[in-house]
Image 1 (tube, rainbow over the protein chains, first blue to last red):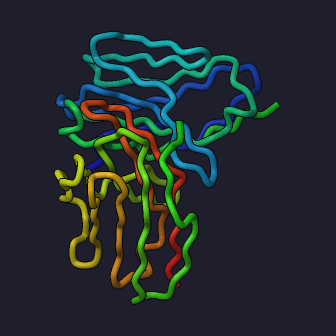
Image 2 (image 1 turned 90 degrees about the vertical axis):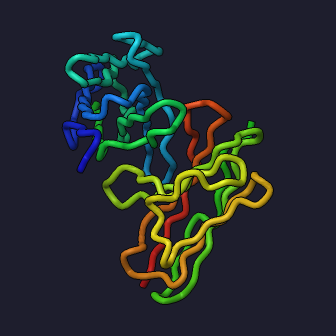
Amino acid sequence: QQQVKQSPQSLIVQKGGISIINCAYENTAFDYFPWYQQFPGKGPALLIAIRPDVSEKKEGRFTISFNKSAKQFSLHIMDSQPGDSATYFCAASGYEGNTPLVFGKGTRLSVIA
Amino acid sequence: EAGVVQSPRYKIIEKKQPVAFWCNPISGHNTLYWYLQNLGQGPELLIRYENEEAVDDSQLPKDRFSAERLKGVDSTLKIQPAELGDSAVYLCASSPRGGDEQYFGPGTRLTVT
């Protein structure tokens, strides 16, 4: 039973373009939705996170859009750069970790010049 | 501020041998997690500690895996005996008290031959 479903599995974007990765969840106890970025041989790094009380959060070129009624959230990377090429994971957890953090299967992003 | 430290970074052992991984969390972080990451997958929680207490070990295969967090700081994860299917990356993460943000270490890549 996969609690967080992520798509697409892989994504190729031209430099300067917009990368969009989508996630859907089922558990209504989730109230914290982070995105992690992982480079080969490294651990996941927290990129940006959102809570259900807002529909959008932006940090630099990274934006999370959140749709509570649809139980979906997405990551948008504006002006994508080759250095953004990595694997991105969405995740979700419940109140203060009492519902453990669960991850999607990841999206491998390649930004080509 | 130093991040989560893990050692060793790589370990190759023969099946049926024991192996141990060590983690030093970010200073002041009360909560410590061990995750398993298979190739091409997101991390999966093995165990969560609040200080020295294991508060969620439901996903830890207790027949061969054990963990400890003496004095509520460093932690060790042990596998005995290792099986071929244990080949994966073992990640340690930590978070501050009451915080949802989890910060990951670089992981230990285990290869069982």
